[in-house]
Image (cartoon, rainbow, N blue to C red):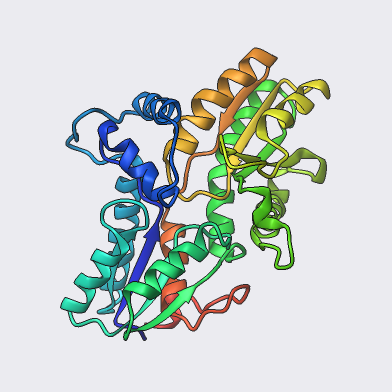
Length: 326
């Protein structure tokens, strides 16, 4: 077993004034137009980010740290000494800084788990590169993707069941479910070495839908779309959520339940893109929009992370439950 587990997340600024510096990290130093910085400051302000740091960190940081704490507590409760660390690629605490702390703590080998279940060169690949660079000389096992993990699927289904029943009861009929994941540039998934991301994202959605069959969700009751396309850098993959909402309205639907399956906790792509922007678009179309709660501190998610941490793990292969290992 590894000495430690490192959970990796995207990172988010703590204040509005840090937005330009944050975006510089995200883009790898490519210039970001001032209007884009201002628009993102506006969006983050709408979900609670302020000019000065508040008593509580922004949602992504808050929930990622909580996921690390819950995993550590699960290990402790089961008599395991494996320590859990959390690091961000684009903001504090940076991967390099956390790995340096791990060295000081005497960690010589660890398992890194990216809190983005679907593997992509634009996300997981960059986390892996940063982690291996920081951990030179240490033994690292990197979990590159876990889009089909049974506990992840059940965690999403658990959140979806509740809101889907509410929506169906309110409208008196089965309401379509729209699964989403973050879009990526089209160039990422084309070429000689296609990226697995869109396939894995759709596979996660299909497995959640399969899990929902017992609740009454049929094959025709769900769709998939990519959300949060970038504002620059060429075309991004679709279909978009906006396009799909229009199709659903044309088909005569009066409501939709959105469940983002590419995200594990609340952050701007959920709290703004879905809860504010998509809800406004849906309202203008005459659609009522519901959203499944994010996994955040889901016990099922914690158990999934524990199984990934205890290895050995190969993408697509279920790991023995924690109860069978302690």
